[in-house]
Length: 223
Length: 223
Image 1 (cartoon, chains in turn cyan, blue):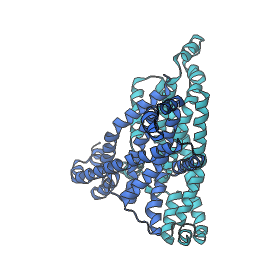
Image 2 (cartoon, each protein chain N blue to C red; image 1 turned 180 degrees about the vertical axis):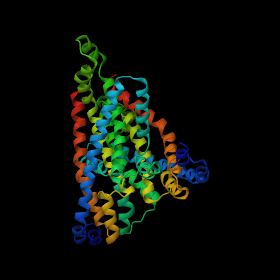
Image 3 (cartoon, helix red, strand yellow; image 1 turned 90 degrees about the horizontal axis):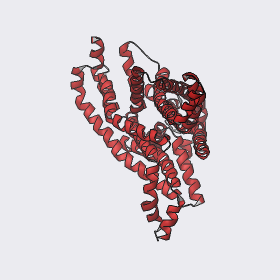
Image 4 (cartoon, rainbow over the protein chains, first blue to last red; image 1 turned 120 degrees about the vertical axis):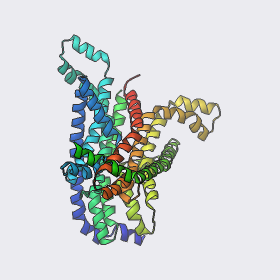
């Protein structure tokens, strides 16, 4: 028990590590937010573009979605970070992580939005066109509001699970929570900073996971 | 254009590093083959235990599920691989990755199977009980097959994510596909190995990604 406390809850080390790890945590939160805003926004944009049924654009979007839905997140991060410089484009760890994860989320959320748009009953758009709605108004006033409700549970789950990927930034030396804790740990030869990092991740994600469970429950009841 | 090809699809480098990549693929496949069934089994056990309606056990299992769903899997991996040795618990890279994947996904699969078991109407259980089925057989033979059919889409989607996540093995220096490609890149001084790894990942996972997308779409569209 003493050994447990000394190794994982060593207060003097925790006090030292706290500012560094907390700084990393700020970065984790910042990146997660940017990934979610960019990813969901781009996904919605792509889904709306897709609903216009222009053939070439359709192929491009399907290609994008398939590519980023299929490749592992870490592979995308590593390829962007170590491959792009050969094209004369050097990206910072921060930009790499945000772009890679946002691309993945955009692919998944495009797919979710698109299926949801597709799932709105045909009668809705028939009725709206019969009432003289133009295609734009039809999409934004009638179809999307219903589609968004259908998409919400899957979307929140996906957004949470992808924003957990910020920790992968460590692989390209992004100084977020995990990376900071890991470098501090190797300095003091004690894993307490790691326990601190784990605790910080949990305080961020447990509320989100519990909330997503609630959203799922509420929306399944509403049907 | 020529320069681009020389950098990103350099045939000489490809021939040189081919054995390295091949061995990487083998290890990635091994990771998936070991971790996937174990994780499914763990999740299934959690869900079946949950269905026995013991309040204390249920509380404990819910905490387990949400705890491990909240942990970014990389953080779990780093804790296991770099943190536990301070306790005298030393795992090799392969075991650490499998352990991290199984713990993390026991939460995901647990939640999926739990939802599946709940979705089976109670009449099925009552009928089976009336026919004299014992509790365990009732769950395994009557309830589970129906439950699995109801949650096939999230089950397949989560399995794809697990297989993709084996790439985090590169962060604890196991020479799976991504890591091998990085090592190869340092030998060839061009990004061809990385591109090759990305292409291999894509080709191996794409059919499954398509299948998952089809299942998920079918789930949203009302029958």
